[in-house]
Image (cartoon, rainbow, N blue to C red; front, side, top):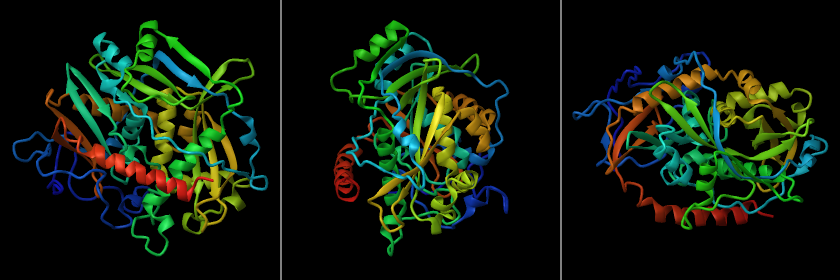
Length: 450
């Protein structure tokens, strides 16, 4: 059974029922199209909604109020440990152009690496050593920072134990999805009966797969990856002593554990992912995040990349920012949190609009995250203001070893809703996820793999 939306929720963030966003201004996309979106997770009737009803405290947060927050003293990240391995960039992809497009090499996409913060041996040791009291990943934190731009539903699992706050993505949840044209006026939905390849779900699967393939194609695998074991030796050793039952991190991915002091009361530890490395002119090593924007139908998106990408790249980017505000903001926030030196953006397009099996790289661009943030009007003082305020609020959730909390972006209103759920609330999803992943693997075999 599905829990009905809260009635007139209010909180110190000023959340209210009804639709938010300005009329005729840049928030107008939030009101269009008027359609009922589905929640990223089924809200069960036995879960307690923390919305001010039934004697529960109200934790509901308004996205429009989040837009007004700012942090005057933005924290700088300090590395605790860097582990894993990285391949150097392959410069071949840099030669891609509209006339000299490079086909995307289709490779089998493994299941996304998932390690809950509470299971992460480095984070467990950092918590035990009192190095921080809020623990999360770059994916979760960047989603929170970019939340005011989000339209689709997403959710985060929260645990309050031992004076600590842990925030995680559920394995296989929508946070791992790469949505396409989420903030477009006529955003894709799953009712595309006449053109199912352009449904919201199929476009997200296509975009996610292209991101993986582009990321792999950017790597020089003729040389062995460089191993990273930098920082405090005790934490580097903790990573190497992961249990045999834990997920195995992919080769060529590095994990950077960073500390941010938000206030006297809150120290944040974030596990961040690095995608690639690059040798600079002075022979030092730069870290990169690698992502791909993808074109599926220029008539639906509004700008034809093959005509505009080289002569008017700013127009292409402005159009992508209009259609993909959330995705671009989240990618940029991830690069900023990680402390990456560059964000490498690829521009990948279908061979033609009706062919979702063959794709070509039409170009790429290297951006410094801080400069790109300014270019897409992402205010970092607002992003850190959101983190500070939300973390302070969530530290007021009662501690419990028997229960967890769920933060859900409301599918149809600019709100973050909160629920108290049993500790085993998501165990029932495991078998469903396994079956779903098998279906997705079959889909990739038939739709994308060469």
